[in-house]
Image 1 (tube, rainbow, N blue to C red):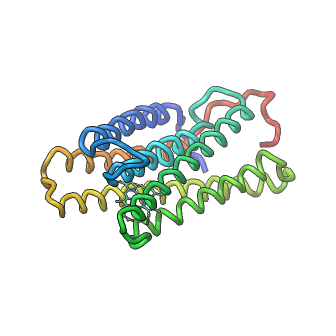
Image 2: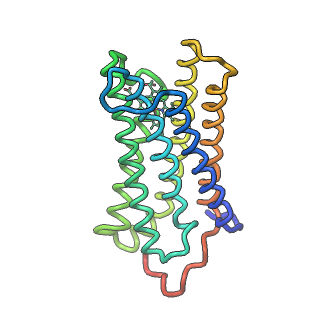
Length: 230
Ligand code: HEM
């Protein structure tokens, strides 16, 4: 499916919102939450790795991976390589980020997987992994037959966007949940940190919306010698 408008302007909005998102999540976790640690007696510093890697990895780098076919003036083969590498980075950062949340829970004596956020999060990372492996095997190596590629492509696009939208939903629920925990322990409801977290959630939704908009709009013209099968 393609909207009859060029994707290129939307992709600039994605880059811009992505940079703002990175700044906001880092300011929140470094300035307001005290920074990061992998080993520490202050277990909150282990948790802080989680939102940063999930937003920068799965949402922002994952979003850039999705729009790479629309944002880059390169050949299809090069864009395909960038697409699969950026998704691999997003997946690895997502796995490390989720591991950090489990590590924080285990070392603090908190139960695992009790919230809707965590259920959705596990579902998203599993589906993201399946989507990546299927895409790699069918479109890259060893590669499916031309028939299988042609039939798989619309499903790959649809399933990829669905998983991405679910990831945006999981991230937004994560911001809501963490802010609710902080407010129940005394954080000012109209304070600057509360606004910052809510604003980061709004930005996450806008970023996701422009990724989807870019993905369903028209890509740049394909060079004539670039019509090799996917
Ligand atoms: C796509 C992005 C995200 C995914 C896939 C994800 C996934 C997960 C998973 C699987 C857990 C369970 C860990 C455990 O049970 O030990 C978890 C915990 C948690 N996450 Fe996320 N997360 C994401 C983004 C975020 C963001 C942006 C925040 C913002 C602060 C956040 C806040 C939390 C909190 C507070 C917990 C601990 C409470 C709970 O288990 O629900 N998450 N996340």
